[in-house]
Length: 512
DNA sequence: CTATGGCACGGATT
DNA sequence: AATCCGTGCCATAG
Picture (cartoon, chains in turn brown, orange, yellow):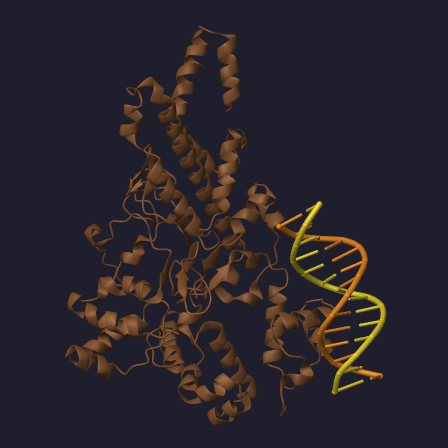
């Protein structure tokens, strides 16, 4: 189907039945352009004709693609403020059938996305409305929502936590929660005893405990603990609900915290009555899956400014979860986040009014209208590219997403571009400066998926963490060869320094 | 003599 | 065209 051909035919055969037929068909197409466009986008086929529709279109899509969530939101806010043709509506549409649906996830009308299949991740756009949903799954009525259409993308820790726990919080407990949240230190720990808070508010200790427990189980899990140890215990309790954890892990944290943080594995092993190797494995598990300073890096320790500015938490661009958290074989669910609620539209009143407007202003109105529809199209294009990108990445790197660094399959932006049928620079832009959240709660920069050596470095870390005595680089080289990683000795030295691992000679002051 | 880090080169990637 | 990355060579430290 080609637009330019239609107009050629029209010119050549004016007045023929064929031409009138085409003309009506053509205008109909234009009327339904947005829907048509979506369908084209949705099918895996590329549509070069549309992509090159206008250079402005292409350029703007590229710009939107390389924007971070924060920039994108600023852009849309600015457009909404200045362009009367543009309107944001608090409703969501199924990306497949384009009908307004109540919830994201499978569409109740066309049941898109189709029945989950382990190999095919489910991808959908999300405006993160479920942040306002309580953990019991009770939706909060719309009146409880901030009337702003924009989601806070950067906020400080107390606000971030308050927003999460608000639905589960009895209103008379709000003050207590606020007291706790504002008392948190920079690492997210609660430096004051809870009976102090109970006394201050004249309430029984148990009520403060309930509120605190709510906070501790919110993201990042473990904030509001009194110590790194307590934070780890909370995390492991939560983790154990969804997947198996090593038997002694909890006991290790409870009893051997000192040795754990000082990496005194020999000591640790003796106390627990296990081999040193086993002790190292447990320590490895803990460092891979838990975080003693939950406020620092769970959400990415992106500090804005230096010095005294409090740490801020930035939302990832996409969140990946398992469809069924208990079943590691279930399919991945990817929410590609948008920085605003609802859908952008051309204001229908504006569209009607434009016919009646005075001629001298008409040009301006028309320009606004075109500008707005261009923005909407470009935004759809951007979201679509992001969706397809995340789909492909998640499909290829499923094991990495679930199990961590060891399992990264090296890939290049170029190969991905080839598979998606887009230009390499498109991928580069889409990847730059974006992060996603993987099921264990870590933030992963999208660029890491294109790290050529991450998996080898993970293997290197493991070798060194479980070594019986300090191994030299050459010895490590042999071990890596056994695992199928063929790298030069010099390269191992480089990886070591990348991972901040000291040279063998300086590693253990007194090896056993 | 061995282990490791600095420099630089060339090929791949963006 | 610019940048990144793995690797070889060589100097140096132990």
